[in-house]
Image (cartoon, rainbow, N blue to C red; front, side, top):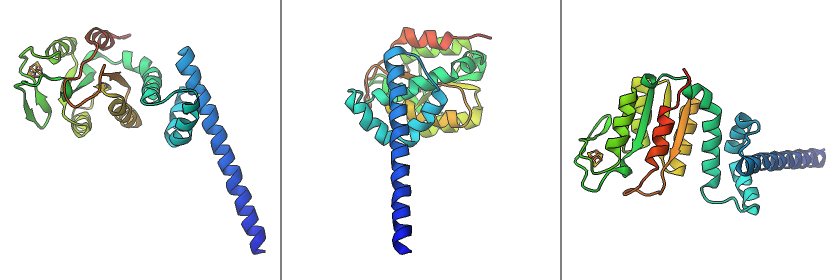
Length: 214
Ligand code: SF4
C-alpha cells in the first residue's frame, strides 16, 4: 500500500514537472516570436506565465542567446503593448511621469521632500526639458529616488496612467506592480544603467508622452 502511494506520488510529480517544462517551452517560444517578429501572441498569458515560470524560461532562452536584460525588456515591452490602447485614451492631465534621480547632474541643486526631488530647473540635466514638455501637456511629474515614492505618489494622486523611466529591472518591477493595480503603464528604458550619470532618448520619450487617442 505504502509503495503504491509512493509510486503514485512520484508519477504525479513527474507529470507536473513535464507539464511545467512544456508550458515554459511554449512561453519561451512565444517570447522568441515576439523578439524576432515584434508580433505579440497572447501577451496577457505570456506575461502571467513569464512571471511564474521565469527561471526555466530563462534557461530555455539561453539556448537561443537571449540573456541578460533581454527577457526583462521583452516583458516590459509586452506589457507596454498590452496597455497601449488604454494608455493613449487617458487624458494627459490624468497621467503621471516618474523620472529616476540618476538622470540628474552631479551638481544638482534639487531638494528632497516627501514627493521626491524638487527640480530647480537649473538646466544642468535633461530633467528640466522633459519636465517642461510633460507638465506643459498636463502630466504630473515626479523625480523619484526609489520605488517607494512611486507607489506612494500613485496612491496619493491616483493617476489613470503612468509612464515610468528607469533601468531594465526597475521598469519591469514597477510596471508589473502598477499593472497589478489595474493601471495602464508604459515602461521607458534608460540608455545606460547606473546610480549616477544615466541618460535617455529625450525625443523618443517626448513622442511617447504626447501619444493620445482621445
Ligand atoms: S535640471 Fe533639475 S534635476 Fe537637473 S540638475 Fe538641475 S535642478 Fe537637478
